[in-house]
Length: 392
Image 1 (cartoon, one colour):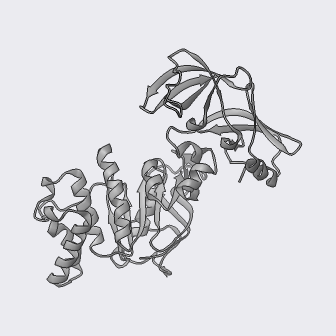
Image 2: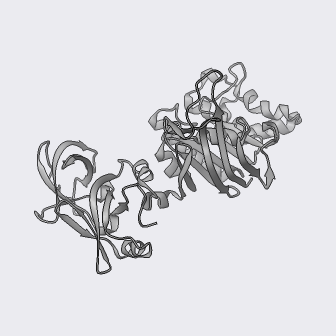
Image 3: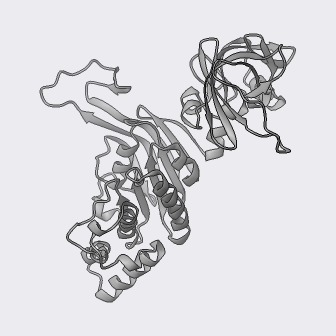
């Protein structure tokens, strides 16, 4: 059990010896390059409550694993302060932080049995044999791996090995459990199963979780709150529902949600206290809640990027006040169809049910067919041309 506080954390990787230094403020693969080196993480501020499950999510190279390794003490903090239970730990050795970490690669000792792997950190703590045995068997029961205690790692499946790695971490009852993409080596079915196991695990142990992944499904299903990162910066912090319903910017809107949100060049107009969005011949009034948010921020008429999620696009029978689209590809998904269509030059995805509420099959469309699309004002996401959500 632990609280963690990050205060303006920054991590800079110095330039390699002899390598030509880039100019100050220059960008390299999205990351800032200064005279000191490549800035992998910057301005990282976050408070984590006791027993909270925090997920750091973002594309490769965004700084999430680096942040996790700074918590573990495996990477030095260049600037800023990290507190665990109100104790500054910047200079505290990894072994003294009472932190356990689960790696992507399992990192099990191949010559040891499952029991010996799980008992190893307890032996380092010089606990007596009876206490070690109790803790190992208790953790094995929680993870349902008791029957494998006498096996070597090579005799286990990937999912079983990952459970052993988690078991080795939790036997110590650490204050915080750090998990760095622990499911990425598993196939889709095992990942789904292990996600459920991790959800159950957190109910059984008293630890704070920090979990790193690039998989938004893991982030949405596991986290109490999600920290979305890009190029070393935090883009948004919120519950899974908050970041899905109210993305702070275009990056978050496009990253969270599968299939990703559709984007249209559009026009926002304010007319007598009401707000409308227009795309081609389609003009839709925004919901009262969205109008209230825009008015509170004194938003004026302007060119925007309009975001609408695929599940919120509606097939329309009307010729007017709707978008004209051409079907490029369609994917039958059982209870729904995913249409990939072209609206002007934009690629748009539409999710439509295969049946109506009374069980009748809805008309389907083939490749090259024309259809009309519309959307409601309560599902629109309005971004300025720099990518900021104008509602917030």
